[in-house]
Amino acid sequence: MFVGHLGVGLIGKRLEPKISLGTWTLAVMLADLVFFPLSILRVENFHVEAGVTQNRFVGDVPFSHSLLMDAIGGALFAGVYFLVRRDRRSAWLLFGAVLSHWVLDVISHRPDMPIAPGVNATLGFGLWNSIPATLVVEGGLWVIGIAIYVRATRAAGLTGVIAFWAGIALLTLAWWGNLRRGMDPDPVRAGTGGLIFFSVMVGWSYWMNRLRPAA
Image 1 (tube, rainbow, N blue to C red):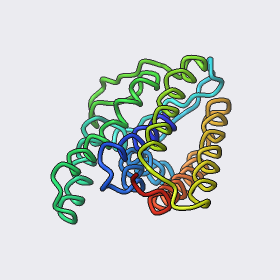
Image 2 (image 1 turned 180 degrees about the vertical axis):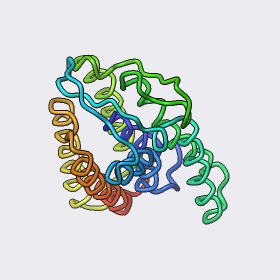
Image 3 (image 1 turned 30 degrees about the vertical axis):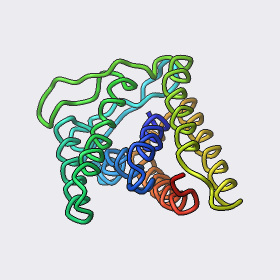
């Protein structure tokens, strides 16, 4: 659930404007940013399966995407933020943002989302099995997140308008391409490309936080 996660980050900026949009984006995408290096190192792996949405990946991802490890990652992320900012409420919100990744992935994935490393039980409701349902549910969350963020912020100048909407357009196109084509089956290429793209996305989010301050 690519833009669905980003939608949560955009909504988060409205919940707590003091937290940078870049930090919100880093929190909601933390599981994927952990997965990409593990994929490159072949610590975690995945395979693609033909389905309604063409190639969808089914992963063996207990260290980056299990409920337990996401909770631990969220606690560490929130803990570091609290040590730096001394803001307990914001830290708890960021913990929830990290954990939201697992919840949304359970909704979208086939049953491959683990509870914890070494535990055989996995969950997944398979939203991705249907492109129309994905467009409605994930696309709807994306549109809602954009609308809330636009109302909660104000562009400091023309650059804040152009750069924001250009970024939204590129992210939407990337999401549509992912829906149609799925992931690259090569773990090194997929991990490298994903790590670069998501790092740029986080950087863009920090930039937007400067160009679009809270209204």
